[in-house]
Length: 291
Image (tube, rainbow, N blue to C red; front, side, top):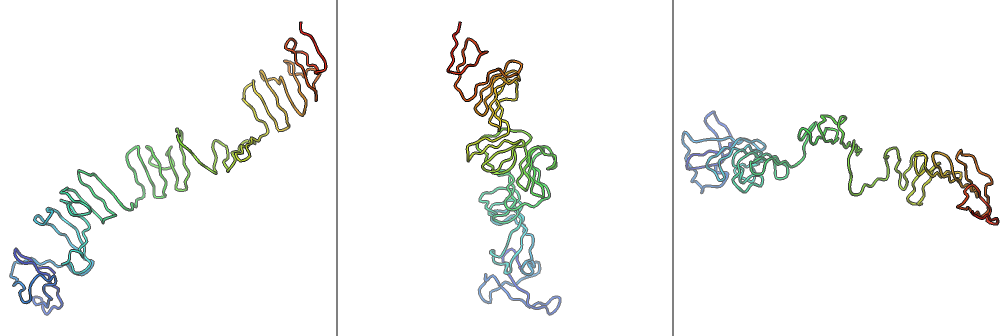
């Protein structure tokens, strides 16, 4: 316990109780007085019981260094040594506590690396782990739930959010623009499956390692004017939705406007197509003059 008046300040430990008014004590635990020079305490002196290790109290001062402030503390035994006093909370002047070196007024709670501090100059600062069922920052801001899911926007729930990242690492965006590099070795994009080193979907495979595009039919367009390559070695040119020219297995063919094949077909021969008459296809050994 601590006994103090306007002049003296002594720490004692009660080692025995003979009666309600008679105690056996060990005096001057802090070693502040010479032998046999301990104060004579009189009626009216203040006595504070610090009790045993792990207990604590409230300390309020308007005269100590960096006053005024109120502190909540506990101790690890021998509370006359400041090294054994643990301040857990301070309200008032924060100078000298949790890294404060200036006279700033506010509230500070915690330890050197885990704390909550507020003062008008620095605002609210938090360090260490935060445990909560849901954390919401701003009405249309940032949200985290107890399952580790993260989302942004006005939705109060992860399920209703349009921009979100699940605790399993699944990212969902309803729309957006991206810059930079996006790398993935698995997943899907618009029905296309990603599996390094290929992207595949609907029978089409893009293989970056082989430098190939594989598919049943590859079209340059979905419109009526297009070129098609099929896996039966056929290359076909369409105009107005009708096959006009095709190449397959050494055969070159031309179709009339109705889609019927013109005769003759040229197979395994060189051809000479005259610009003056596109209705005739002749072997190179033949000739025809233009008029």
